[in-house]
Length: 162
Image (tube, rainbow, N blue to C red; front, side, top):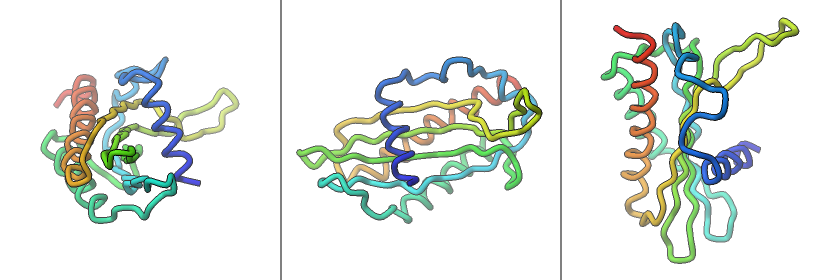
């Protein structure tokens, strides 16, 4: 089921702009405090369209890189905080190259008009890298993820200065 979600996100990334979804703003980051990084393990797609096993080693590399970058940018981390979700999906083409779809989004509790709370995405960014050779997947995924993490950090720090 999670794979379908990741694929749907990839389609949105291809169709939509690379900016925030309508109605989202940097202001949604004001006063949120620490974040909790959640990485959805990279799920490369097999040439036959089936999902191959998650690349656990790449997932660990990306998670460590994201946490290090956030610490460098002085953004606090805490496990009981709004969720900064990182999703990376690779889709092969017939030439053996890949398109990499990357999403970084922030989900936090939002209160509905009925008084109930739900988890809502309040900030997100997407990127697509095309024609990536298989041996370049780890480096390209890391570069794309960190580029989006830097955009998050820039927006976060703009409304939560020092």
